[in-house]
Length: 331
Image (cartoon, one colour):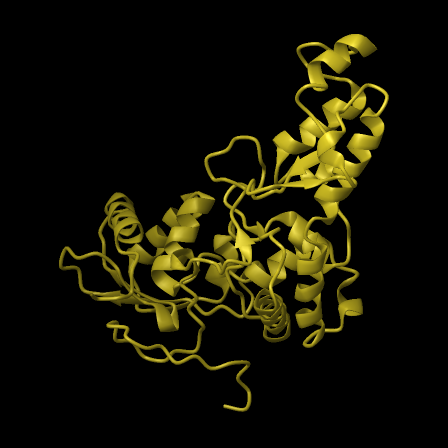
C-alpha cells in the first residue's frame, strides 16, 4: 500500500471485477468538474482542439482553487508514476502548465473565430471589404464593437479598459483594441493556471518540465490516441496458438485513431495508451469458438479471443464489441 499514489473506494457499483494491476479510468464516461468548460465545441469546424476542455474563465471560488490544485497534483502523480489519466485539455492549458503564454495565432486552436476577428480588426482585413477607408471602417465597426469582449464561455462580457462599454471602436483605436483583446484572451485563465501549477509543483519540480514541449507533456500525462500496434504487440502475452492472433494484429493495425480509442476503452477502461505503450502488458487469451463476441477483463487488460477462422469475422465481432459493449456496470 505504501507504493500506491492513491487509493479509491468505489460505492454503489454493480460491476464485479478483480483488482488488477492497472488503473482503469473509464474516462470517456466521466463528466469533468465545473472548473473546466468544453467551449471547444465538438460540432464546431472553427477549432482544432474540438472536444477538448479548457479552464472555466469564471472568477474562481476558494473551492475551485482547491480543486485545481488537486488536479495539478494528479497531473504530477501521472508524471511520477507513469500512469495516465484522461485529461483531454486544450493545448493552451498544457502551455500554461509549462509557464508559457500562448500567442493569438496559437489561441486559434481553441477559438479560431474569436482570434480571426481580433486579427481582422487590427489589420483592417475583413475578407468582404479589406483595407477599408477610415470612414467606412468606423461605419462598419463603430456601431457594433466597443471596448468589451465576451468571456470565452460566452456567459458575460468584460471591459477591456475602464469604461470600455461606452467607448466605440474606431479606425484610430483599432490597434489599441486588438492589443487589449489579445492580452485578455491569452491571460484570461491566469489565476486558474496558477492554481494548477501550484498543485503540480507539490509533486514535481516545475523546473524539471521546462525541456518539454506542450505536446510532449500532454502525451506523458494522458498517453497516445494513435498508438502503434507494433508497440502494443512488443509487450503482449499470447496464451495459446491460433491464426486468430495474427488476424487480431492486422485488424488493430487497420483501426482509425477513434477505433483504437474504443478498443482501449473496451479492453482496458481507458481511451489512450501510455507513450509508445511503455509498461503495457496486453494479454490475449485464446478461447473456444462458440459464436460469441470477444470478452474483456479491464483490470488486467486481457482479451478473451475466440478462435475465429477468418479475419473478416474477427473484425466484425471485435467492432461489434467495442462499439456496443462500452460499460462495465451490469445494471
